Image 1 (cartoon, rainbow, N blue to C red):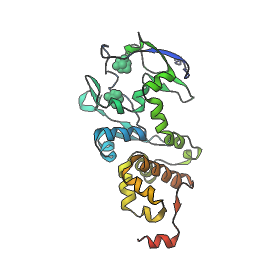
Image 2 (tube, protein in one colour; image 1 turned 120 degrees about the vertical axis):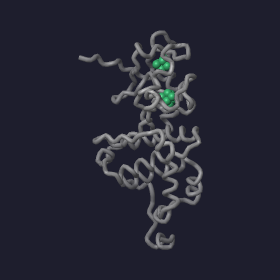
Image 3 (tube, rainbow, N blue to C red; image 1 turned 180 degrees about the vertical axis):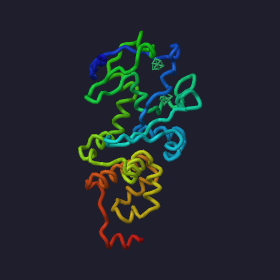
Image 4 (cartoon, rainbow, N blue to C red; image 1 turned 60 degrees about the horizontal axis):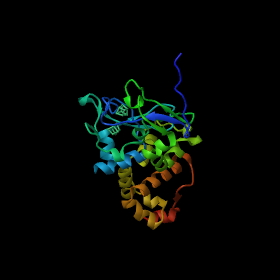
Length: 249
Ligand code: SF4
Ligand code: SF4
């Protein structure tokens, strides 16, 4: 019987120190499953000077797990370079300041039942052998994982919504809507500004101005659209028929 790893709470402590002097340095940035949150994509694409559409196409794979409420956007590893992360260099992560939430958490991960676990294996992750004393909550704060989690609050709220389990994300139309609205902020902006979206929905003029340039405002609209379209929530207001006709076809 496999032994379950101990559960840690925010107040608990663990020992860890990762630094360039370790022989395992950057080995963990290889052949690893990293699932990107919408906020992860937003930060990385900005840091790289790409659109989210380009970033998703170049560096991610979409994973649809039947029975799971939301699709997963997985960071692609470089098959031609021993499955290393495209962003790892000998000195560390090229986009360290904007690294994904999962990379900030490591060597910890969240447990589905709440709390945390040290997921890394000390045989491979030598920073666990002789490290500094960390309280879990201090570690999360130090790494920016807490802040990153807060920025993805809408995502967590949506993923945990009880109605999400009724969705069929193997349906291409639903899948496309979710991925575009939540992860592909630039693709969604293009769609909103170049379709009849603004003729159909009543949005404040200030909000329309904001979504043109502000990615966070655009992403907020994406969440509202998904909640309106898929969960039937009143997050957006449809214009009446006369207004829609006056808005042009
Ligand atoms: S100590 Fe762990 S986290 Fe740090 S480089 Fe080594 S394997 Fe990666
Ligand atoms: S994004 Fe950065 S920290 Fe995360 S696996 Fe890639 S190189 Fe490592």
